[in-house]
Length: 243
Image (cartoon, rainbow, N blue to C red):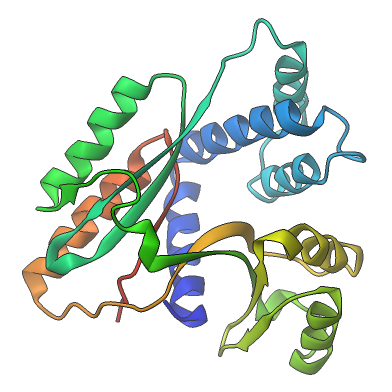
């Protein structure tokens, strides 16, 4: 998927989530819990938590809600124990789909993910059935309108910090890193005051699949829309080259 379509997809998903704040707040709340569990409750010493807090504020999550989430996660025993689970399968026309979830009820999540595949005429597969077609990379998407640096300045900053690729698109910049260099590059951009629309370790497809049949496109969108609506789904990745 090109940087342009990735940017467009992020925007479309953000607009959809903005229309249903409960969904995005649930996702961020769980990300806060995981970040605190992994690195502690102090964002000054936990960059993952710091970034999730920035994401929460960008989504207009109230400060007291953020603080309650951190305190609850730091409390340990009375917090919910979330599991990170991955599902893999195929949509129509052999489109590969990877679904990352964060759940407190794996039976519910498994049933919902399977239903999303089935209703879109797809098939849920076994672990590693499609992930071999993707590379695990750090991926940072920057809204061109929100960035005060030109392409050359941003590229130099990213490459000096350890990025392995920089792509300039009409409305965005995309920075790709090795998984091991992702945190260093993200921190360098953060220190330089670069606003990041999305920053994550993602599954990047090695090749993409084009789908032209109208009904097949509807079926793919059906599956992805159902995944978008599921509170347990944190992210999904496909090798579908959307037009």
